[in-house]
Image 1 (cartoon, rainbow, N blue to C red):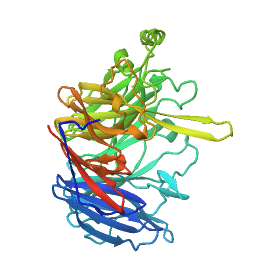
Image 2 (cartoon, rainbow, N blue to C red):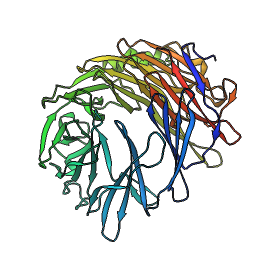
Image 3 (tube, rainbow, N blue to C red):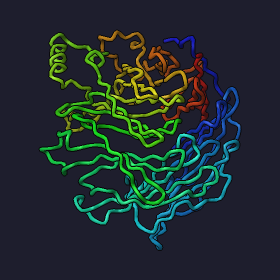
Length: 508
């Protein structure tokens, strides 16, 4: 498969490979990247690499050792012209949960400030997951669309184990990202018990207001009423610095809520969007969106259903199968099964892009009693919703993979979906299913869709074995870094204990 004519690739000079526990990459501007690689048994050795210039050559490397005992790496976040490293420490003698932050020198690498204690909580808080029997992910973060404010959210351990008796208490602290000064902080008692509501998402806006997105129930969920759309609704809780919660409720009518998110756009509106399904449906029926504007007015939800023709795309279906799908459509229970939302992007004009994927797991046991598990990453479904809440377009990109998901990039003009694929799928007819992607014939490709028109194009980028005569290894989506509206970079191993950075540019 040959590279598309609209694609240009440049490569850096080779540089020493860094074997690391984890590797992450952060674009600084269109011509520089900061790589952060963590080493050591205690995962406390941080190697910062700065890549810059037309070829993305290695400019500088700085090694830092974290001396604090018992720290947990939380996340690295970009906020305007700042890059912050967040970590937590549990002060066991004083039973205090603490969140610290240090700024990172984006031009040279390494830390350029001493640790700042952001949050100190003298009660135990709940983790999002466990690692080595230790609760992790205790502090969650959201950054406003203008990058000038951010919020730290945490949930106190429940006082009651019985969900019908416990009412969650959640802490919120809002900060100025330029100087890390606290704007306000408060603890919020949720208005309903755990059995009568679910916390779905949270956000902060550019004015420093906090938001919770919840699903609430009229009655506790049982087998009998779990498919009753009338028993559930959504609500946005507007959290003020005075500790009060102002509830704005809305319903999806006869539809059930599936994946959902909340995010501020660059106009200061809070976008609530996601997938819905109909009662007794076995999959996702479509997308919805509702917008809370800066005046506090919430729009009525708008629904965009997946049509029969859209669901049939890139499926090899027998005549009998087509009739069954048509009958299901007539009975109003045709849906897209195993669709999960993977990524969300807010566009410069206030529109949003929802990117989902058909994902499922299969297992089988062989004749020797060994169980084999396979993860399936299939078709990518992308929906673009305009700033006014109207549907822009829907696209389905054919894919059959058992090893890799996809990467989403957006610019003012285009939306890019990147994944590795079988070259035979480049000109796949819509009535045929995609060919599986195998290691020997994989090619990294991108679908480019015009944000205004929905017109798309298949772009072939590079193969898995070599790029312009350079043998390459260890390609991974985790090593792909978006740079500008029309370029990204990817780091790959080239043997001889060396890595190389490849810059991929699209002609627009």
